[in-house]
Amino acid sequence: MRRVFAFLIAAGLIGGGLPASRAAPEPATAQPGDAQPEQSRLDKLHAALKRERNERAAARIADQIRQEWLQSGSATIDLLMQRAADAMQAKRFDAALDFLDEVTVLAPDFAEGWNRRATVHFMMNNHAKSMADIEHTLRLEPRHFGALSGMAAIFKLYGNKKAALNAFQRVLDVYPMLRSAQEELATLADELAGEGI
Image 1: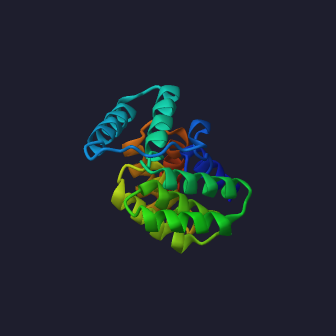
Image 2 (image 1 turned 90 degrees about the vertical axis):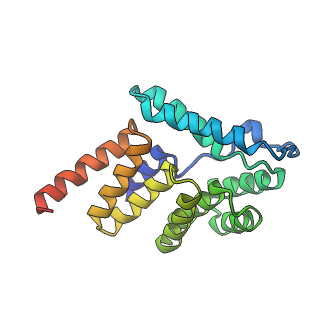
Image 3 (image 1 turned 180 degrees about the vertical axis):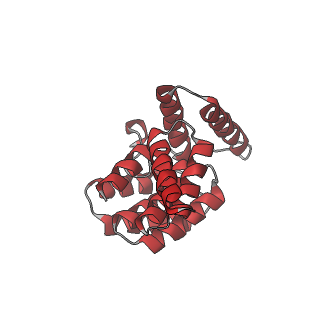
């Protein structure tokens, strides 16, 4: 179990709240055309992440993507996400769930709200609920390597090695230089080869 948590921390599924600069959210001033430049910026970052062959440089790009995922465009959602992150840090998971439930109701198209709720469910060992939120996250953002990592970890916990291997492959399709996913994939491939898949 310790190895699973280490992997999830490395993949960015667990940990990290809003950056300090966003702790006191500014009022949202989004304009109707603002979503397009954000999506374009995210697309460019994902393309760079896929191309990058230096592990450290890839990690920096992945951090920029995580910051983009946190951009809700709403001061209310940002505040709820910060409070959820603080509650998670303090291991007050019920309180974190309350905040994240509110996020998913107020902003159902905000993928990171679903992903954070999946993380809290995972930390509470509510794996079925975590998987449901992961699937919702991936419907909104199929390239969410944190959610894909969580999916892989849950499959692995339940001994579904083939599904875990496929999920880790999906992680690496998006983030090829994620060392923890590379190692997990290699281990699972060896185990499955030994079992004669």
